Image 1: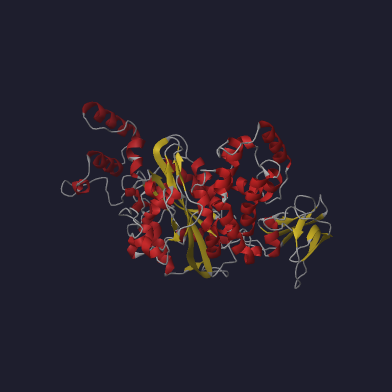
Image 2: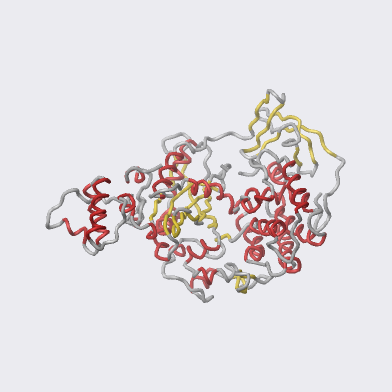
Length: 586
């Protein structure tokens, strides 16, 4: 039975959405934040990037004041400032750089573009801003909320062409908007050094604190304009990003649990850290900030300056999908030794089952065969867990391991829906049993992603069901951004230029749900309950579950003005449970 469909019907949820030729192209989309205390939060913090052109510099200057701009700067910085202020052509600058390389000891690049860009390792930031991004998205929206809840994602992605450089997007999910769109607020390009943390996070912190005390007047010149508050609900980040944003030493942070006082054990042979199967004493925000736990906080930690922000409870450490990846790769690729991996024959049988499966229309991508399991996205792992795993794994792992897996499956299913809210505590008990028994089946493979399951229920109780804190909701946007980085210079400029082009067409228009469409071929009504769930005749989208727990085969729907929506179908009375432990599937 389609669990996501069940939630949407029982309780309709709110479910998602190059080269730059000059610095002005980028700056058009990069405002300075409108606040007197935000003077340093410019679109590009690194004053050595090719996108940062100080308008106060003149192409001509006097001997008295011209060289004030060069005080305290290195030779390369002075030359870069001069080249930008004089608008020297790239060909002329190439020739000048060649002369300098040949006739002096200065180590300058051969290429003018590379030279004007500056050292990527120093880092560059393009910050479009939360307020501007929100205003742009809602410019055609008519149904606005009083309080807009947002999740922020901070995770880096490596750039293949640049060995020491990573793209660190600042992404924002509008969590209580039906499409749950993921929008780009800013981009940092550089190496993840402590010195870059201030430049990367400071504009975000300043604006979030500003928005805590200010409401946005959205579309004030339209009838559907609204004054709207913006509230940060959670920051979603992986372990490297958590260490980076809170100023922790990553080497130390990797060996301790972020949520509880629990130290891992480093295995020098396996080059991994394992954790105990029980949770330690919960950490607190106050002790974390005061350094009571002994972590090595680096000096720059702007994220801890956020107003109304709990550095422990408001940071999400996991949503369970990483555990599904770990198990799947362990069974398929022998990454959970000594647990036996699948034979070639078993893999072929599983591949055939995967290829035969047909999922509801809201599942946009079919599952790939096991050969590509290492490349499966978070969405694919989510689909496998909730739609395919129980059927496929029944005869592919031993019965004891299958019973153990069902603890994880049932807990993840229950925690994924508000329809099961009264059973969330029970789901937490299942996860505790799953983690406690993990070493029984998989020996020394209880890593941090498994240990973090002990804290998942508390996060669901605080923020809502797993889809509202789903880390992989940001996956598609992260892959899209990384795909914009091509060979050549100026990776940040290329990404920003491409994003600005896409941004002009990405704003969602309001749609009224439920929406009914007459299908001429099927000769029936297609019912869209929201943007991510529809009912349609046929096996793929033709089933739903009522609040009375009755399975119904959909036939049609009708909607009369002034009356509630009517959904018609044939009830299915002959049914049986797929499993009875740890709880009944019926």
